Amino acid sequence: MSIHVALSHTTHYRYERPITLGPQIVRLRPCPHARTRILSYSLKVEPEGYFLNWQQDPQANYLARLVFPEKTDELKITVDLVAEMAVINPFDFFLEPRAETIPFEYEEWQTAELAPYLQKLPETPEFRKWMATIDRKETPSVDFLVGVNQRLANRIDYLIRMEPGVQTPEETLKKGSGSCRDSTWLLVQTLRHLGLAARFVSGYLIQLKADLKALDGPSGAEEDFTDLHAWCEVFLPGAGWVGLDPTSGLFAGEGHIPLACSPDPSSAAPISGMVEDCEVEFEHQMGVQRIWEAPRVTKPYTEEQWQRIVDLGHEVDQRLTELDVRLTQGGEPTFVANHDRDEPEWNTEAMGPTKRKKAIELYHRMRDRYGAGGLVHFGQGKWYPGEPLPRWSLNCFWRKDGEPIWQDERWLADERTEGKASPEDAHRFLAALAKELGVDEKHVFPGFEDAFYYLWRERRLPVNVDPFDAKLDNALERKQLQQIFSRGLDEPVGYVLPLRVSEKEKAWETGPWFLRSERCYLIPGGSPMGHRLPLDSQPWVEEAD
Image (cartoon, rainbow, N blue to C red; front, top):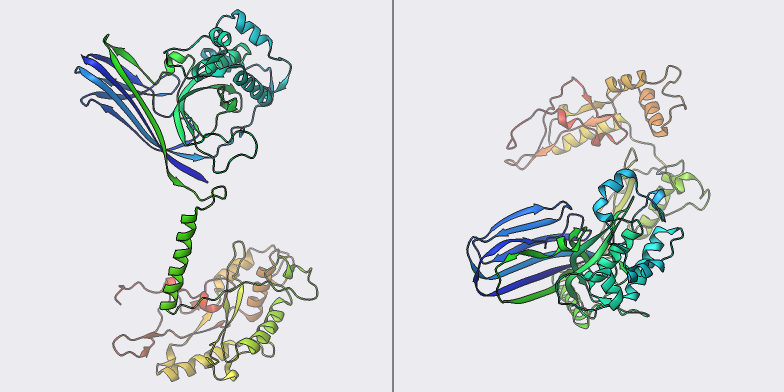
């Protein structure tokens, strides 16, 4: 579940007179490694007539380099983005075995590549005291980082500081307070003095009001909120860069959207560049708005929403009544025999020695009670993945008013007492049908199993296995081969009568099929013949014909 939010950020400088602007570097585009999905992004700059080049710095941050050829009395930069706020587990990572506990050492090649993020400021008195309070004994890495981050958050009071620049760790510790950037720089230096590569991160922080208030502890933001923020990332082998927010004492989550990551705070400033010396008015506006929310159990419907749902339900009921739509409720009960219920056919297998027989018995008992005079249709049902054939489906269709759909029970086959119809029965039936429909019965033709396929299949069997041998792994294939070779490949499986309705004469008509061979060979398989006709081998004709 997620929430889509639109973030708007405007930075506006108004100068006392038209001045010359040097190239301006804007670091206000989410970093490639941002875990929060950015659905759209736009950057608007005023005044017009500027040149823009997108670049990437050595840390792979996106930089917009702006060049203004003309003098201007203002500079306005507006960022609009849409972010998908889906919950991110900040601890969803694995560590390499050697990095599972702190202290650990990076590999030689890692140390070389991480050198800018390991540079330490000289120790000063307050900073030395602070470092002395950190227990260096071997500790699980995640536990250690959680502890250090929370201790720093408790040690330094957060304040909004409008002065430019970043306090040194010594200043922050002496004052016991600082802005987010001051606490972050202190944490970066703390981790570096512990031998861990760390970098300064500038980005957006989005905090949304919780759906429900916490039962204990703080509930978070009272209203949806966003602002520029700073936090720290530490490099852990196996996990990569992991975010720590020393202002809250928490690991970075979906609300932290990095814009610039750098070894030093000076190269992570949102906007930097040279301007003429002049008076300036500065305006900064930020806002966040929800534009889409997935339904979730933590945010109950309002009374207004409930009422709309109820009204819609009444409207649907009224339309159904007007259109005479009658609703019924069905189900798919599972029946199990009252004996041998642990056999595979009643648990995992599609078929078995007694399942079909008992299904037929149950079918007729239910039909006699509920659907007398109904139309009987036995055919194929669902075809589940991994099974060679569809399940069988026994259907009965009847009218609620008792009017019979099927009149003469004599013409309904009953598997409880009768055997299967033979190919000869099929031939006689189609001949009678052709006569009844007034078409020529000479176009009735037999269908045969594909002799070439099954002879090839027999030759592929091991030399000591014949089609009747139980050594064949697949029981269904064994049964199918037995039936085919017992009947003989030269015996018809059944018969076919092609039929269609003449559009001109509105009467039934038939005709010959043109086959590649003199016989109609069925597609190999175990389905009924009607599902295995070689329709693809019919000659191609125009769609109109």
